[in-house]
Image (tube, rainbow, N blue to C red; front, side):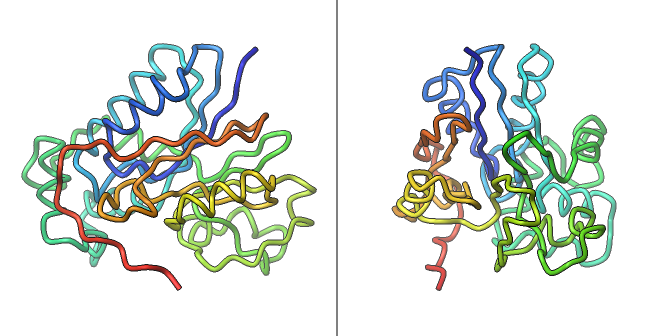
Amino acid sequence: MPRRFATTDIHGCLLTFRHLVEHELRLRPDDTLYLLGDYVNKGPDSRGVLDYLMQLQAAGYHVHCLKGNHEKELLDTIAGQPNANHMWKADAEPAMVLSSFGVAQPADVPARYVQWMQALPLTLELPDFVLVHAGFNFALPPAELRHDEHSMLYIKDMVFDASRLAGKRLLHGHVPTPVTQVQAGARAHAEALGLDCGCVFRHNPELRHLAALNLDTWELHLAENREEPYPIAKRPARG
């Protein structure tokens, strides 16, 4: 029977993502995999993650990808928009990202990656779930709720209102959340569940995992960061 999975916030962690897909999920061609954004930046192999996603899609796998704030910010940087480089918070990050694409300047990132990222949707609606990278501003009028790009890509302190989604559950990423908290949400079949376990933050033992949720059984699959060492700061505890 076909299965449905969702995961998010890969951030260049190609080895970990491949392990999740090929060994933890054992993804089959009739399965469906939803990704909630942030494939690039922070981690060691942004281009490798995009290549792998494109390869899965080209091979006929049902892989549906949303846009995250880091795709937007990389696109803004490539386009030379003012102040776009704020996305690179670690000194080593620009060189690491550009090196993965084999270029020296953001404007030289090959067009096929730019076009792929530009075409990504902001949200997907399933019969039982609504998928988005960060969330929604539920204080907005109904006509604006699913058209407010900033909240869908950036919101962190979301006041969830299930009535605004017609009873559907919300899956999102964006905010790195301890594995134990995500596991508890999956066990409880939470109305809103963030799946970002901060995989890229390899120095944080409470994070450093990719999490994939089976949308039918609510089983949570985990893959611990298995990348070669790369420069990234330890993420401070959120609170």
